[in-house]
Amino acid sequence: MFARIFHLLPVLALALLAGCSTLPTLHEAGAQPLVHDGKARRGMTRAVVVVPGALASVGIYEPVLDWNVPDGAVMAYRFPGLDGLKLDHRLDLAEAGALIADAMRALEVKEVYLIGFSTGGPVALEAARRLGDKQVSVALISSAGPFPSGIKASIIGFFDVIEALSRAHGKSLEEAWLENYRTLLFGRNHFGKKRQANLSRNLAEHQRGSLRTPTTRLTLAHTTDLMQWTLPRDSGLAKARVGVFHGAEDSIFDLAETRRFAARIPADMMATYPGQGHLLFVTAPTLWEDVRRFFDLPPRR
Image (cartoon, rainbow, N blue to C red; front, side):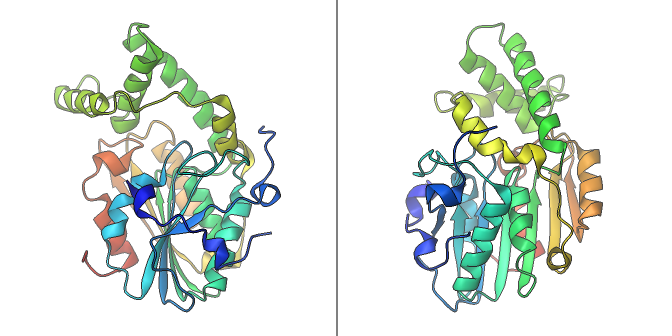
């Protein structure tokens, strides 16, 4: 797994600590969430920084480890309570972005490539807007948007779980969670399509025993700040290249709203994946190559 491959060496040993959950912020807790692949060093040319989404492990980015990043490193921002990080703080989007930006400056990186999935999208944007003096590219995958995007996602997600429980005939919470996973894969409308329905059923079955209902404390630690986040107007962000990668059937963040979000940034490009849902890293076979090409990085080694 990605978390085992990554050296759990806090990047903050090399960099500077940036200055509805009752947990303290990252700064107050003194947590050190940035880890790297063992290649990070001061003065390197480029860094690829990956940020997961709420309740997601940095393991979703394991394919990125195969990228060819000349004179550079792959780095990951861990969320509280996952990937060996204690649940002793809550995610603050701006603070997380500032921490990443401070690390890039301390390491004197010239080119920064940020990838944010879901809730990680706003973190990547918060980092990018603080790095206007560097060459910055951002890939937003199934990204959360500004207020009220997070609130809508929470409400929609609740009703999706209720619907999933109905499809599972109330057998167990695990069965409901597996059914909801199917919705995340291909959206709400795929169940009547035999091929996709069979595929989602098989993919969900592979997750049996590994999907766990998240605790309220963990959920709040990951999502509270998103409920009020707005897209800051910043000249630094205007200098970044931004690409949006979104499933047409995303059940969490609506495609139409994402198009408006992309226009507001404004994004340099938007790739839409027909028939795909929120978990593009599972269902879209070309996703990582699409992102790599957008970044204009060399082919896989």
